[in-house]
Image (cartoon, rainbow over all chains, first blue to last red; front, top):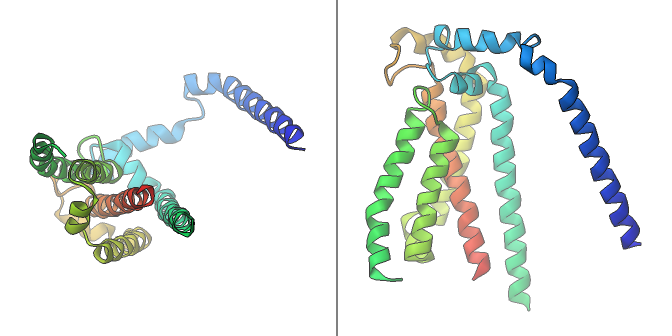
Length: 97
Length: 133
């Protein structure tokens, strides 16, 4: 039972890698030509004008994509809470033994 | 630990703290930001745990204070992001380009984010050390 599960897992991983490779190769030309990247030009031009921040990365992270960062923070809090929960249960099991 | 290592930790810990705060506060002018600054400060606390032991680190930051600050900074950050768009024009009036007080309210967000990341990482680190004992 366990061996067949491992085989399925390996096949699934190979298929996932294949799909990722195909998407990257298919979008290579778009990345080079910046044809579909008008938003990046907007960010670079307006980071200094609108936000008055020379660091464009920070302007994107906190201003243009502020709600994205909000989700990121929630992920960090959730990861911390789950980490602490796992470590507490491990310690409780150790003390029982 | 060896007294040489302890002295080195005592000397380098304030410098690490200062560098972390610098990276977080100048996030909108130079490369870096809240996440990077918080991670640097948390690595300073990791240095204290490794060199001086767990108990001296716990004396610096009591458990209750740690969890309270984590909670507070998380609430402040999330509420600032949500209501931040209303505060924009009040900040922009007084700000000057290429000075510390610039970049809308990103300077406040960076600092609060730095505090939150620092407390979160050091909390996980402390629990891990306590679990391994």
